Figure 1 (cartoon, rainbow, N blue to C red):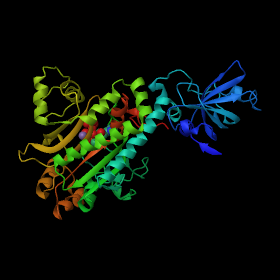
Figure 2: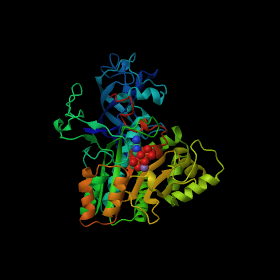
Figure 3: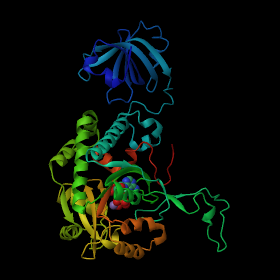
Figure 4: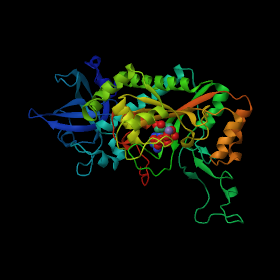
Amino acid sequence: MHKWTVAQARRPEAVGQEAIVQGWVRTRRDSKAGFSFLEVNDGSCLGNLQIIAPASLPNYQSEVRHLTAGCSVRIEGQIKASPGKEQATEMEAYKIIVLGWADPESYPLQKKQHSFEFLRTIAHLRSRTNTFGAIARVRNQLCWAIHEFFQKEGFIYIHTPIITASDCEGAGAMFQVTTLNLEVVPRSEGGSVDYSQDFFGRPTYLTVSGQLEAEALACALGKVYTFGPTFRAENSNTPRHLAEFWMVEPEMAFFELEDTMDLAERNLKYIFRHLLEKCPEEMEFFRQRIDPTIIETLQKILESQFIRLSYTEAIEILLASGRSFEFPVAWGKDLQAEHERYLTEQYFKSPVILYNYPRTIKPFYMKLNDDGRTVRAMDVLVPKVGEIIGGSQREDRYDVLLERMKEQGLKIENYWWYLDLRRFGTVPHSGYGLGLERVLQFATGMANIRDVIPFPRTPGNAEF
Ligand code: ATP
Ligand code: MN
């Protein structure tokens, strides 16, 4: 007999076939006519498989009539055409084996709607709900689309290290990695921590970005991308920041800033198109439950061209807006979420690529423009979420880079290998980082980034 997922058993072509289906009971209803309906879900799709459990089953009274939400079952039966409008098929059970009971007194997922706050406290179970099951499937399709996009564009998938010794890349605070005994930290004579006794013989951290190593590989392989977890110890408790998040970082030799903006725009459009094609049920669910405009918004993005605007022009628009922002607008100050939202939601009603930021607010590795005041940075901003991509053309001139590193107080000796890339066959190159969870938030309308990753890591929270 076939072992089918619920998704397979729900296909109209399945009618007439016999199969085994396994999953978790969502609900049970007993009919007066002496049989029961079970709704079974296995995470393969949003919809449940409706099971008809006849009273003639040997364990009908002893077990089937006691099934409640959360119980796991294996069912053998025949797929029939369903008279219901919601689904094409249902299954008539010959045999129901209860794999695991779930005490209804203590099983926390009852039929009522639970708040996202509550569901975060049971993150180990929340993927059994419609919303979090849908998020997981959308996340999967987005990752698939990301790989497909870069592979089609001729990129090589690389892996950059998670543990790094570069102590500051300007991207954010870092988590230290150590095997030193924190109760009795070894000290050198001057009293400072003796890192020669640490695992790597020097201070090390969880990476905030794979960019610097990706640059080294781009300067050998051409177009590369790394896709992995990144860590930031910023104490920012916002709906858009995680301490551990996933980032896609393409890095391209021989790309100028404009090429990079083109790539970023193609990248986003590709993955959103893929999502609309591959997850219509999930997207319809998000439209009904989370954000009524979500499908329209994504479709509009596929058809429109992103606005491209220099930082200086953006400042002029913000100053001329007549708005009183909480954070005052001035050339040289970084844009805050409220400014990004004004531009994307009110003024342009579109994604915006902002470029050429002041050198003083951007990291050392971004290429200095001829005006001496701005660097070749670009951020892709979208309505509601704000920044989803941050990138730049990299400084490829040895002297200028060294100057910028000194200006920003970096320990030059840690970056000897990075500087080497400018000493030996330097080339113009560029790249960006796309935050997977920010993209997921934008694509689903989910308000809080903690709800688009299965087990969120945020200040004070590393449960599960
Ligand atoms: P922000 O200004 O929003 O804090 P950033 O400028 O520090 O972000 P980058 O260093 O440019 O971020 O990182 C590249 C991308 O990674 C961002 O555009 C965003 O999509 C994502 N990202 C950055 N920080 C976080 C975070 N703490 N949690 C989730 N995603 C993040
Ligand atoms: Mn950024």
